[in-house]
Structure formats: C-alpha cells, structure tokens
Amino acid sequence: MSKWSLVTKGFVKDNPTFVLVLGMCPTLATTTSAINGLEMGLATLFVLVLSNIAISALAPLVPDKVHIPVYIVVIATFVTVLQLVMQAYAPGAYATLGLFIPLIVVNCIVLGRAEAFANKNTVVDSALDGLGIGLGFTLSLTVIGLVREILGSGSAFGFKFIPGDGMLAFVMAPGAFIVLGYLMVLFNKYLKKK
Amino acid sequence: MEYLLIIISAIFVNNILLSQFLGICPFLGVSNKLSTATGMSGAVCFVITLATIVTYLINKYLLLPFGLEFLQTIAFILVIAALVQIVEIVLKKISPSLYQALGIFLPLITTNCAVLGVAITVVTKEFSLGGAEAHLLNLGQATVYALATSVGYGIAMILFAGLREHLAGNHVPEAFKGLPIALITVGIMAMAFLGFSGIV
Image (cartoon, rainbow over all chains, first blue to last red; front, top):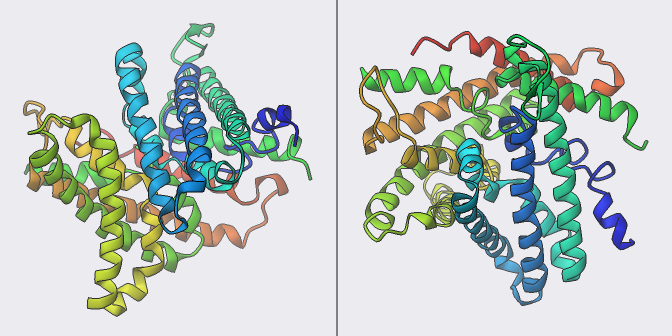
C-alpha cells in the first residue's frame, strides 16, 4: 500500500464513522456544531497519531498476554497529555467538549488502530495510518456537525445565515441520531464500493 | 427527597444513552435480541455501580490528598479494567449461574465508555438538587446516581431491543438496512424521552 493511500483511505474507504462505525459516543455527543465536531476530531487525531507511533515502536517488546493493558496505559497517557495541553492552550474547547476528552481513552477507534495496524507495521506507516483515520474521523464529525448546525440553528461554522431559531431538535439528542442515520444512508447509497 | 430527584433525573431526564450518548457502541452491538440486551444491562448495572464506588473512594482518599488529580483518567481506566477481571473471577467461583448469565458480557464492559463516563462525572460534576446550591455528590448520592444511571441504561437498551426485534421482520429499503434504520429509530425514541425534560 502506498504511503499516500494510507492517508487518504480514512476519507471514504475506511471511514471510521460511516464504514467502520467506531467511536459513536463522541460522534453523537459533540457534533452540535461544525466547530465542536472539528475540535473533537482534531483532539482524537492528536491521540491517534501519538499512540500509533508509540505502540508501533513498543509492540516488539510487549509480551502478548498483557498487550491490551499496556496499550490502554499508553493511550491513557497521551489522553492525559492532551488534557493538560488543552487546559493550557484551548480552555474554551476543553470546557465545551468536557467529559468526551478523557473518554478518548475508551474510544474504540484508538485501540482498534493499535490492534489492527500499529502493532504489526513500521513507525512511519503507523503514524500515517493514524493521520489518515484521524482526518477521516475529523471530516465526518465536521460534516455531521455542519448539517446539525444548519438545520438546528441556521448557521454554519458560527456564521448565521438563516434568521430565527431553526429546528432546535437537531441540536439536541434526537437530531444527533437522526442526522447520523440519514448521512449513513446517503453514504451507503452513493459512496460505498460494492 | 434528593435521592428521588437523583433517581428520576438519571433514569428519565438525563438518560445516559439517549441524552448523554455514553455506551452507544455496546448499545448498538448487542441490542439485536431481547435476551442479550437484558444480560448486558444486568452486567453493566453491576459494574457501573461497583466501579463508581471504588473510583470515588480512590479519588477521595488517594488522588486528592496527594494532589494527583491529573492522573484521574489513567487511574480510573486501570481500576475499571482490574475490577472487571476481579468480578469475573469472583463470580465464576461464587455464583456460577450468575456468571453464566453475565459472563460473556463482562470483558466487553471495560471499553464501555458509560463506566468511565459515570466514574468521571461523579467526581467532577457539581449537581444542584432541588434548588439547593450546586455541590459534588457524597458517597451515598454517588452510589444512588450510578445505580439509577445504569437502570436508565438498562431500560433504554431493553426498550430498544424490543423495537429492533420488530424491525428485523419488516421490509426496509436496501440503503437503510442495519445501522441507519436503527439509529433513526433511536432518534425517535430520544425524542420521546425529551418529553421528560422539565420534570426535575
């Protein structure tokens, strides 16, 4: 597999949200607006790239029996780093995303990539894989956030272009499930390779 | 009175699945059949309550006195993983029948974000109950909160499994098959649960 396709596969072919259906909790919870989705995606991207690099470097040293706990500790370490970095440089985003930043530890995408890719590939390939999947995740979250923001509050990336309140249900819980469901339908119909 | 408020708020108003979006992966994964959904709910209920009590005590008596709050995420996930293992071993020894019923679901629970989510919420979020000043929960309230939350998880899961069993027999357009139609159904269920907001 060429290096370039490692990065691009996350957009459509191995899209973590619409094809692999991983990491549903942050996908549904944080996409109340395009910006929030983007921030959550970038936070996950950060952890994904670093944990993929560390795990691919550590994998030959880790005994098979304890590999899952070791991976979880590695991931939890990078999540803690992310929490401290965000508290210092992006306190606004840290407050909005709240609980879902520490919960990146149990995001199946991160552990999934460690198990499926990073532990049997080189450091460079694993970093690119993390980047690709992370970008795919960021893209899907931004799209879902954008759709919900347009329908729910009549704005896009914070710029209001439809006056009035919008359909509030789309910013609240039911809208998350319904928008994701319909986007998945469109994805299945038009983009997924048969 | 405040216990009642916590219970109603955790089960209906702030349902963990339908309004806080925690534990969605296992929710979508095992809700195909009513019997597996019931088993999973039982296991989650047990682990969330136990894990919350243990992490609450660890946070209060180990992390806070030594100023180690930044280790919360790592400490909690390790405690939960170890706890699930211990519960599995103990259940196997003490109550083989309960182990049979919950057994296969236990390993899955470590990565259920509902467990870590509730553990972190309880020690960080301030609750204001019945107009009183916002404050952190004490151990009793935390336990009741964890138990009520997991009961809410179970209720949503079992209701949805019932709906999904009916969905399976219906004719659904090709592109909607599987997850999309399930997600849209959950959306409508979440809309129904929105009706509870404003009670507490």
